[in-house]
Length: 363
Ligand SMILES: Cc1cc2nc3c(=O)[nH]c(=O)nc-3n(C[C@H](O)[C@H](O)[C@H](O)COP(=O)(O)O)c2cc1C
Image 1 (cartoon, rainbow, N blue to C red):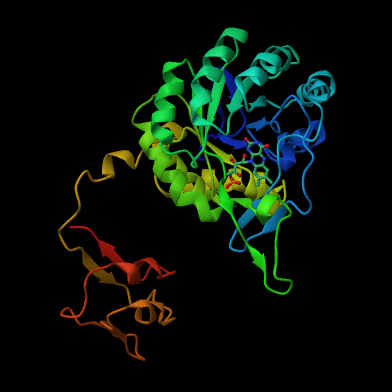
Image 2: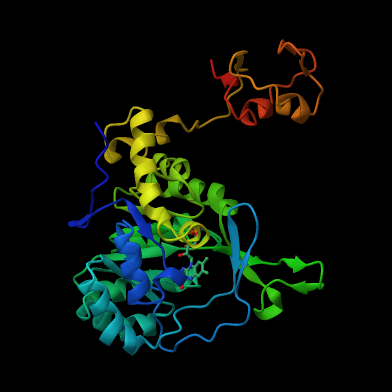
C-alpha cells in the first residue's frame, strides 16, 4: 500500500509535506500557482517588506554539487501589489499560501493585517536580527488569528535559544532554516566575484548546508511539539526523509526546484512515498523524529563490525582509495582484506561504498 502524503498543517490539508520556501519561484502568483499545480503542499511568498527590492547583478550563481549562492534580497514587487493582486490570485489558483513578512517589528505592524486579509492562510516571519524576532512574533500574534510560523537563521549565534524565545512569544511553528552566509566565490577566469552583491558576497543554499540544518532541526524538535518545516539542502527523497527523521513535520525546498525545475516537485512526492514504503514506514507521522531516539548522548566507544558482500561489490576501489591508513586491500577476485592493526575504524570506507557492499554495523 502506498503511503498517503496528504498532511495537515494547522488544520489546512496539504497535498504533500513538501513546502516551497520563500525564493525566486514564489516571486508572484504565477510562480506560486505553477508550484501548486506541480504538487507542492504549500507555498511561501517571496518576503514582503515596506519597500520593494532592487537586486544587484548578477544575484544567483550555481555553486556546483546541488548548491547555489545568491545575493537576492526580498520581493521586487511592492507590498501593495502582493495584497491587492498576487495573494488573491494565488488563492484563486488553489494554492495554500504562507505570507512571508520581514524584517523588522515595524514591517510586521504594517503588513501582517493586510496580508492576512488578502487571503494568506498563514504568516511566516523572517528577520536578520535575532534580538527582534521574539517581539515580531508577539506583535504578529496580536495582529492575526492565523497561524504564525517563525523562520530561524543558521547565521545567528544561538538559533535554538531563538526558537525557545519565539515559541514563548506565541509562535505556532518553526521554519528551520534560512541560507548560510555571507560567503564568497570567485570566477578564476575574470578574477571577479561570481555575484554582484556588496563585497561580492552571497548566501549559500542547497546540499552544502544540509548537515547544519539537520542538526538544528534535531535540536529544535526536542523542545517543541509544534510543526517544524525543515528547509535547507533537500534535493531528493533521501534528503527529505532525513529531514523528517531529524524531527521535521514538513520539508521545505527552494534550491531543488530552482535547479531541477518546478516539475521535479511531483517526482519528489512520488519518491518520498516510495522510499518511506521501502524503509518500512506506514505514515509521515511514523517517520517524523524517528532518528531522535538514536542520537547518542555520549560518544560511542565500541568499535563497529564490518560486513562485506562480495556479490554486490563493483570493485570500484573507492574504499581502498579513501583509507588514510592503507588498511584495506581488494584483490582482482574481489577478496577484501583489512589490516586490523592499521585500521582505526574511522568508518569512511563504508560511507563511500555506493552499492552498499561494505557496511559498518554498530554492535
Ligand atoms: C535565490 C534565493 C532567494 C531567496 N529569497 C528568500 C526570501 O526572500 N526570503 C526568505 O525567507 N528566504 C529566502 N531564501 C531562502 C530559502 O527560502 C531557504 O530558506 C534556503 O534557500 C534553504 O533552502 P534550500 O537549501 O532548499 O534552498 C532564498 C533562497 C534563494 C536560493
